[in-house]
Length: 335
Ligand code: NAP
Ligand code: 3JN
Image 1 (cartoon, rainbow, N blue to C red):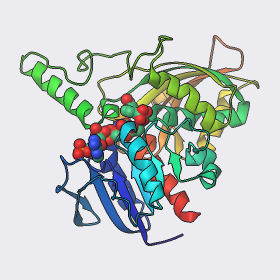
Image 2 (tube, rainbow, N blue to C red):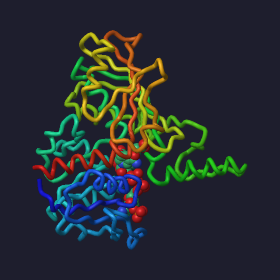
Image 3 (cartoon, protein in one colour):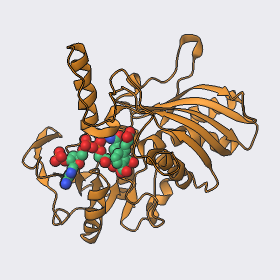
Image 4 (cartoon, helix red, strand yellow):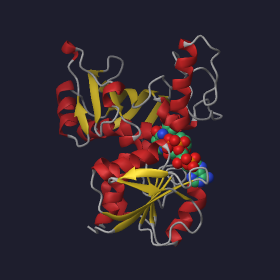
């Protein structure tokens, strides 16, 4: 593995970008230099990395000269405009947005599932949607055990999924309510404090949202299962960090809870937390800041032949974004 890589982070000042910096540091990523990039608004600020303060630079078309790997996390429009420029300058791009995820020439990677796809890249590797990653971390080991056919799922998505603005909205609304002031809204169409919104991302003609359909299409691509069916409802909840998903899945083979537990316990990146006798199950509050996802409430589904229902949760800023991206970059460094 090369030890002197020049890494750039596009969107370094955002919720995901800041966790990318922390993750590179925590995993002792083999980098020689680091360039944090953001908009003109943040140029000149500094960010802490390995005991130093590093200057944030404004993203421009010339930002990628000498960069080996560029980690993008500034939204799809920025990725579409600047990722090709980064590739032309010789960098490998790992992109967090949906801009290239369903492009046939772009691998869509969860390293615990399809790490070998990294080697097929032609300059860009896509990081899947965060709810999709947390879901397939549990579903894929169960698929390997029983062969998954379809799933019905509902997500419980933290406000940090909407970035720094989502976190600020929940904090502000909680203090407005505590102070008896009028609740103000900037990010969500309704009050998120003390509420749940069955609405993540934009609505499509079908009545599903874009986030819900990302889970369908991206799960198929990551698991290599074009016939996999899914019906998903994505819900925003007043939780700061870590997404949870309630899943009922149907399998080809007969299932058993014991075998399912063994499959989860043996899988990398996901832990079993399933002890109902002591109220043990995954909680977003406990998973915030944790690398591994957790699965609990595993039971035979009582409405489906060969069905399992379970609850999976994980920190979507880490395994759903920054950690998964850095894991992919580690694979790129090994190529
Ligand atoms: P965020 O907190 O709003 O941060 C956005 C980042 O993009 C900031 O660093 C911002 O820089 C930068 N940016 C915005 N406009 C820019 C421009 N014109 N030029 C350069 N940089 C610009 O959002 P986030 O939660 O980190 O998410 C970023 C992206 O990651 C999302 O759009 C999504 O595609 C993906 N993602 C997010 C999550 C999640 O759970 N949040 C999970 C998976 C994937 P300034 O500080 O200068 O504004
Ligand atoms: O809302 C969430 O909980 C996750 C948000 C993800 C997100 C936000 C803005 C744009 C995405 C994504 O990763 O799918 C995108 C996007 O790139 O489409």
